[in-house]
Amino acid sequence: MPDPRLQLRGVTKSFGEVSVLKGIDMEIAAGEMVCLIGASGSGKSTLLRCMNGLEPVDDGEVFLDGVDIAEPGFDLSTIRQRIGIVFQSFNLFPHMTAFDNAALAPRRVLGEADSAKARITGLFERFALGDHMHKYPDQLSGGQQQRVAVIRALAMKPNTMLLDEITSALDPELVGEVLDVLRQLRDDGMTMVLATHEMSFAREVADRVVFMDQGVIAEEGRPEQIFSAPQQARTQQFLASVLR
Amino acid sequence: MIAAVSTIAVVLAVVVLVPMAPGWEAVKKSFFDGETFVRTFPTLLRAFLLDVAIFAWSVPMIFALGLAIALSRGARSPALFPLRVFGAVYVDLFRGIPVVLLVYLVGFGIPGLGLPRPWNSPYIWGTVALVLTYSAYVAEVLRSGIESIHASQRNAAICLGLSERDTMRYVILPQAIRRVVPANMNMLVALQKDVALLSFIGPVEILRQAGIFKSLLANFTPYVVAAIIFLCVTVPATRYADYLLNRDRNARS
Image (cartoon, rainbow over all chains, first blue to last red; front, side, top):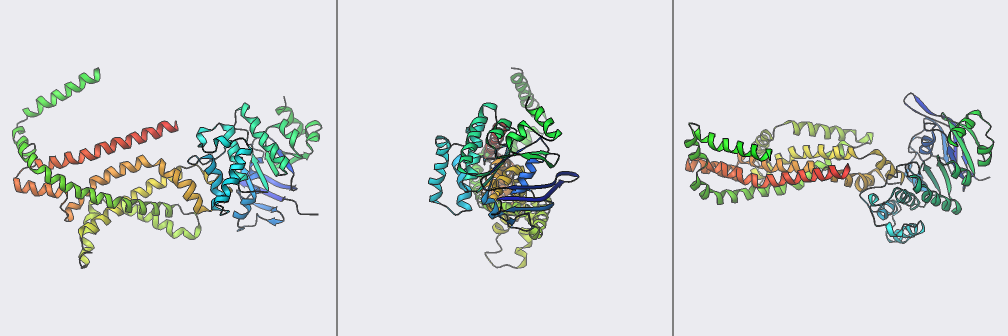
């Protein structure tokens, strides 16, 4: 059996006194789409940040394609080309056009010059932003900015995408266009881990739903099982509060 | 309306009251003598060009050194700790010494080592003194700009695989420098005035030229001429800095 794309073993993480992750074990297969759900503060974002080494873990192992990237001193720069991450607050570079936002890392890290141009233009066109790629972030709507952020991550040709509540900062009418991008990526077979509050979207597209509560995985399973027949009392409680 | 009335009242009071002071005739003769004004103005203006030249060649050095110090103070790697200490000491030292004192110490002290021509020139060592002081200030301004850029920008860049160096060069610095343009404009206004301090170690720039005229003509009007020439440059520059600051504030609110 091949190595899973991502594998976590006993991952713990504290910020000062606060223990945010209390021993997470998880496997994510290549091409799988996993949705992390749970209340704010349950550890979803921190877990994503540990998966690409943005937050060093206190204890435990994080394997990417069989290599432990949580080892202290591991050179994470090569990992980060393979794992794209998109944040809730977009974090586009405000002094660059949308196109330059996406082209910076391919030029500087992959050493692409002219070849990047056609490829990145293609990405903008694919996600219906071809007319906007020479605008600056503050000239774009929130939904457009977030799609640019996805394109910027895709421009590094990652094999895995981590998506941290990427629709939470958007006006409701702009959420759909961003979720459509994720559907397209899923159809491409991209491995994705997605922290989200969009329950109906998670139910529709996820291969697996992971419910996190107070730093542990409380329950996981296929979406229809989690949403229709949750086993744990706290899962039931959480779902009852969000699915009113 | 009220503003206009009160302004007129104040101006009138000054115009009427000041000449009533017992020494006014003497002051008028020695500070505001029209004939001396006309006679010394062209030479003083020419001397001011030297101030402008010293200013012009100091500025690039100040910003290059200031940037280097700001970056060394922000170095994150533990191996670069000595660099960080050096940056902190540099800033403390040269920001803490009055410019005029540094001009004296460097301008007289270093040529006193017996350096041959042209290395004993007061232009060189005066410029060095200005660069040392002002690069310390500029370094602090730049550092505050760098620190004002939200950590999420750095995270986003690092997550794309950019090196620390590229993150600083392409993501952080361009934003930080833009943000501190108004503060640096104020710095330049102050520098333009402090260039006159070099007169104490030799160069015949505007302040020294005014002093020569004062001795020659036994009249202080040349100093007033010099002040007016300075104001013609510094007032528009200050206004421009304020304009940039306001624009920046409006853009962010």
